[in-house]
Length: 153
Length: 174
Image 1 (cartoon, chains in turn green, red):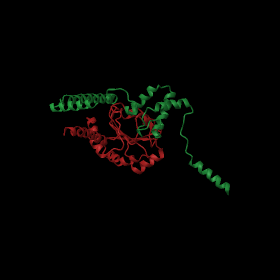
Image 2 (image 1 turned 30 degrees about the vertical axis):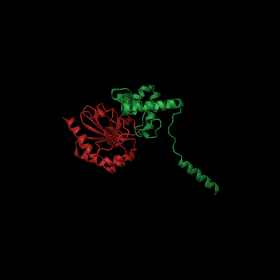
Image 3 (image 1 turned 45 degrees about the vertical axis):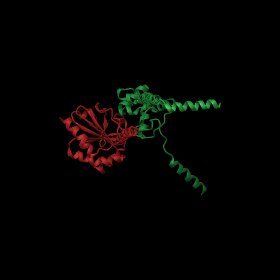
Image 4 (image 1 turned 120 degrees about the horizontal axis):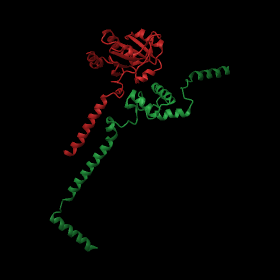
């Protein structure tokens, strides 16, 4: 009876086990695929890279990349292959083009604009703070106070 | 007064940008294939694998290529519209059965109705990759010269069909 139970448990485990994902035997090749996939966006789950995603499309695309690396395509050619089909959006590091200039330089332009704004603002404030002369009686009172202070010492 | 005006204006500009952002669907990525020749294929027909179809067979006509699968729930959602479009005879509709089991796909068509002139079977999804398919259903409008003119990502809507796809077809027919 005990053995039947043990056997039944084993069968249950067997049934639960999922089929292994196809994985390249060649560790160097697999690392190459993952390094390249790290910089490409998975379009199904857009904030994941093709290297991290478990979406079916990502698995297919990694297989496609594996075949292309084996066929001797360069990294650049493979990235171009992806961009031609899925658009510039697949790159996590978009290429420098007319359409991506704002993306690349926008933050720096905003920084410069901010610094100029800050500089001008500070200059104006400095001007405002300086040009206020003391009234005559205030000057006298100040001299008295300072004088009194000096005598006390 | 002036002190408050500036942050309020900045805030309003931010609100406008965020509001525009909300109306956009991040899953609709403009396809780089629009304006380019439709990638070629030579795939077996779903109902008769001995026969094959290639885009060059359809040169000279304007046609729609609808990528679908029996496992795809939004495909069922757009299906009544496809049946209606097929009945209207405005444009021939070809299907590409994407990463699907042949039996399941044929069952699905038998149950839901078949709007397609012909359906090709892309069982391993290789041609899907050529077309940049990433979310079924997707629909491509291809002109007489075999150039992709429009790509619909996700299910077609009656509004989208009326406002974008049908006017484009009328324009291409002239």
